[in-house]
Image (cartoon, rainbow, N blue to C red; front, side, top):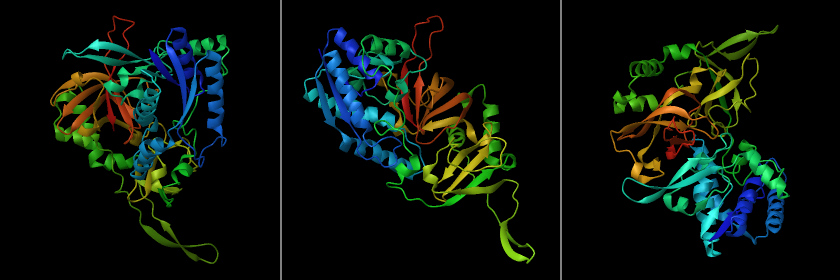
Length: 438
């Protein structure tokens, strides 16, 4: 069998290629360049060239052919343009998930097949397993990787069965320490290379500068929300009452109640009046905002689209005992709302919704019908520990009610849902069932 390894120059893909070669596969490597523009990046202009150089040395060391492919056009159109559009609408996308679905296991896969590949392999920490579904069709499960600190199944949560059928994950059954040890033993130049950070194939970026390539900076207010606002908010009180009433039986909630709970809080009713006063020895007339028990204008920002829920960097707001976090953004009014401290009420929610056209089942035979409910484990970001939750399929979409409040449920991000494990089987790995955009 001929296998194309997506060789990035990092240690994970290097060891993936090494293992496949040792297992007797007909292996060749392909390095893909997906990005040229360095505006907003925090590293050198030629970082991709350094990665390509390391990847070539690795391929030579292992003894496999090496190819180069430029997929920057597809990447810009299918990943980066999507990213810009999501931020412009006040949502926070996950470009790495899109990169895997649209580039690594689509555009890259097609190029690999043109060179004769039967399968594509990557250095992802995850596993797949063949299974016969209830409809009698043989399909593939996507399972978490063995290393709990490196599992990357979340990033592959949008792959189709066709894509999974052509994918290999050679290091999914290894720990990161074992991968580095194998690379060192084989004297691969990537053995001590640090893991890449930032946006897939773009790198670590100054996000506002990067986004300003297409999105304009427009100054607006930063509004700090005080605790009394929640006591006066009808929606917040109603949400709390519903969650308390249906705490032990969320499946009894009506569609309307679930929709209400899944809607984020709206802080637009916090308004500020001005007053004039005289200041200084010369009694100069000035204007200031009147005190408001619900909040205050705490600063200015350069554009609401540049911020995301849970963000604490780049706010430049001092004078607080605890860190300040973004709790909401409003693109129309160009306001961002912030709160003080990890425990601020605006950071925590228990219910989210996936729209019907955004639900992606890894194995179609397991898709829930309208009216069905199921317990699962879920995560709303990479490396988050799996959280206990209930899935409720309704006409309005897939609702998720977490057992415990979740920090920073963010529109535009992907939520991934996993099957419950068999507690009596220590080798039972969580299977990724479905995913969708929040």
